[in-house]
Length: 173
Length: 141
Image 1 (cartoon, each protein chain N blue to C red):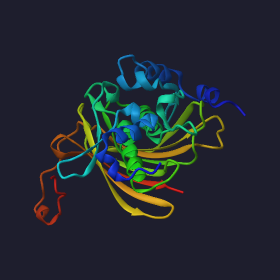
Image 2: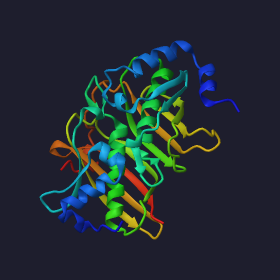
Image 3: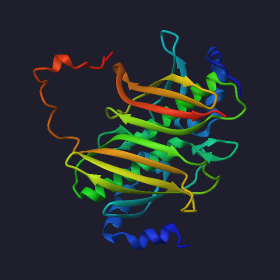
C-alpha cells in the first residue's frame, strides 16, 4: 500500500500546500513551535497534517501512548486549516464544538497523521470530520468531528425579541 | 494508584499525581481548592498555549486537553485503580475565545458506573467568564 504521506502529496494542490506550509509553520506561532506539526497536504475540502511523536505529550507513561488532548489539538488545527482551504475566503473562523472518539491507544514512538475533510459548509458554519492514524490506514487511532463558525467578527447579535423574557437565560454567575 | 480526594490536603502528592502524567505536567496543571473548599484545576497561562497569535487566544485543543486532564484527575480521585483511566470519547463546546490568562476547570461526575464514568467539565477564566463546556466518558476497567 502507498504510504499516506506520498498519497497526500499527489492529491493536493501544490499552491495551497505552499501557502499552508509557510503560514502554518511560521516561527512566530507559540503553540506550533512546541508541537512542530507539519502540513503534508491541503486542498479543496481536505487537509493532512503530521504530528511528530514527543515524550512530553504522553498521557500514559507505562504504555507511552499520547494524551487525547494533544490529538485534539492536532485535529482542531488541521480542521481549521481544512475549513480555510475549503471556503477560500480570508475570514476569521472559530471552533464551535469538537468531538473526539479515541478508538485505540497510540503506539510509543510513532508519529500521528491526521486527515480531515470539510463535508459541508453554509454562510455561517462549516462541518469537518476526519481520522488520526499511525502508519496503518485501516487502524485509525481517533476520529473527530467538528464544526466551525465562519466570519466570527461579523455583525452583532440581534436585539432581544418581544418574547425574550420567556426564554430561560443561563445564569452568568 | 489509589489517591482519594483527600490528597488535596497534601499539596505534595497532588503535584506528584500531576507530574505522573507527562502531558498534564507539560501543560503545567495545578490542583487547588477554591474558597468553598471545592476542588478546581488551574491551567497557568504560558506563551506556548497561544493558538492564535493575532488575537492572543489560547488554542482550543489546549483547552480541550486541559479539561480532559482535569476529568482524568477527577476519575483518579474517586476510583482506586492500579492503572490510569482511559478516555473513550469527549465533546467540547467553545463558548468564548480563551484569553491569554489563567484558565480554571471544575469537574462534575454525572455517573460513576462499574466500567464507564461520565463527567462534565466547566472551564472559565477571570470573572467566571465561561469559555468552554465539555462532556467526557472514561473507561475505568
